Length: 108
Image (cartoon, rainbow, N blue to C red):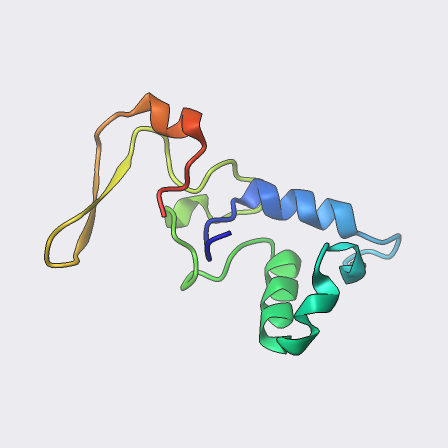
């Protein structure tokens, strides 16, 4: 999975899957591979922070900032395509491609 391509809906689903009976507490061991991240406390800390705050850290989010909210489906509005200029500057074009959403690609 690429960094920052997680939707608010996915965060919500993970949050619900690992929730405990105590409010705002989570059973991190329910996450497949959690024990493998013990060698990377920075990664565990980032995952914990994202689940608790309900969104990806803004500097890591690769989508439209308005879509970085808990429960939000997708990371960009439909009909937008990311265009990269030769100079490396990014801009968003309002070109409609209904198949982009249908394919489920994140555009990374």
